[in-house]
Image (tube, rainbow, N blue to C red; front, top):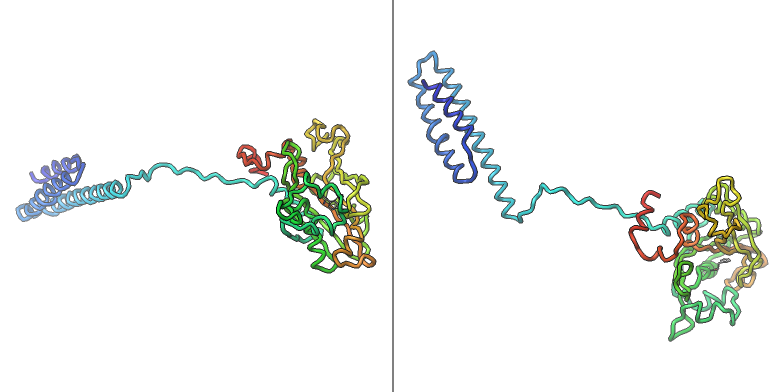
Length: 346
Ligand code: PHE
């Protein structure tokens, strides 16, 4: 009986193992060309009352064979295309991209800019290769000042008038020369000193300096500005201390210390409890400051009778070391990812 034959063929079609183009062709000839057309040709010999059932069964068988043929053909084509191009395995999992981290110096630099921008300070920039006038003379350095000597400054051998800037105060000079007060600027950048490299000193580091020049700018403005900065950078409980000091370009001058938290009820936050930074004193130095010497204003064409101003300068490495309890300055320039990765979530 023909319906039985259809059942047998259905089993054969399902079982038929197609592994390559040749067996695919065998399958096509056997079923799509021979067996199924033969079953179709039988329709006219089937009793009329069974014809409908028979016709449907043949059609279902045909669909089954065609589906198997076309899907296997597709799979074989894709496989051979893959091996022809490169033998690449597109199913391999991808190598995840690691996100980089922001360098701690950049993190702190950005925070410094943010704090001073809110106080109305804009940024000024200048060259790292400077002449003697901008780096020293205009800043009131006497001709025999030790900072001018070879052990502190990298001078150009062929032209000792040219040096790598030793501080960003040279940018203050350039800005004062080119602009009229009032001015409120910060200068950030890399500076160079001829020092032996150790955990506490390097031949280059970064500074942030600032100036505020207007009528009636006073020491009080200076103190309040730096006090605000210290609290924003190191936490609301931080206090500042101004220690009388000397810089050729400011008068009066002071070193700026911040409280390291030794006297805070929560303990010494900057030294990490060890007190090895403040040496038990409770204070750590973060920079210098003072009222701009009238000579410096005059050197830059600013009327010192009418205007006064303050200036300050701080080391960004120093602030970063205190903020994150980093003990060795060299870590900042070694590019060791084990160090840098720790700043991923900050
Ligand atoms: N230029 C000084 C330094 O490099 C820092 C400073 C800037 C001090 C401005 C006072 C005022 O050490």
